Image (cartoon, rainbow, N blue to C red; front, side):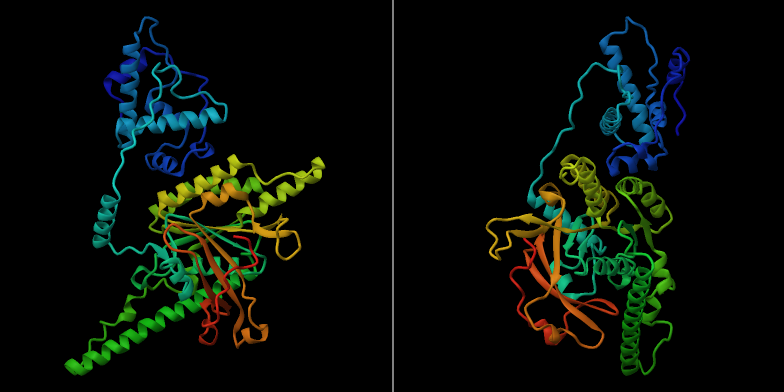
Length: 467
């Protein structure tokens, strides 16, 4: 914290301290991840820290102070707060107003109460053109080769997604039990550790495990996938090195041992090193899940400061505890209750989107399917399968993938040595790519594209899930 100016010290000396000011941890307030990250980075851990920086400890002032003097006083306090944050006064005011709103939402007194009689003015929104955005994007692309997707090592799926699961976005994966949702999430966690030199994002992964699928046998499965990835990368590096040696021998009659591509594989890139970068948080109820998610910004900041940034957040699954809580409430009240209310779910989606944007990571949320009554159902059952959590959640996600078993060929033809049943992944919603499908299999090494004898099978135009 910066030292207070002499004028502030004189002002403080003439004003009695506020003895009953309650200080709350900022992580306990419903703040946006970007706001919380900005405050934590500058050393603000509680509302008391913010109040001291703002010089707003409910200090009394003379009754004959004019409105203009009060406004000047408030502006001076914001300037001090802005200096602490290293931002403009308008940005500092926006942060202070957001903290005030968060305090009001939990029925706590505002920090800026009675400091100014002026109304809050929303920050101006400056428009821009599509051409200028495209120009800046191309300029940034020419200056940086940072990977913006997490590859799945399944070529059809990566092609469907335009290179992989995108960073800074919320991707939803929907499917029936046993369709392969968790298997795909595990593959993405392992692939998030891929070094940047080999086309990866070279980051860590965080898993919010609500169903218990990631412990025990889940760890063994991660180990198998990590081992396969290491073997693939080191094998590719070895083949490139051998090809380079052959070229040097043909051109110069000798080669330099130290100049091999295999040396580009980091020493930490082993199965153990990959698993050390996958952090699993087991949550047993809705409250634990919510608290863990809202506490993540501090953990993500610590990871960044330690040079181990998180590039993937998996929630497996978001709907599980909500549906359990809904079922329990139905039994207690004797009537059917809906899933979490729209406001809470929308707030959670907004939080995850902010988290993805602020920390440049991919958020992948698993979702269940549920049965919905449908009088016009062609099968005659009167029901259809739809994703859980409702329309509000569906509109909040950036992209939606649906996974199902491939059902259009004889099951006996789908098995070869080391391969299980064929799956179909349907891209239902995306701002970047058109809808489409991809065929993949779940092998002992992880998620892989369909083998050649099956890759030419016709893609189903519609799955059992209603999209």
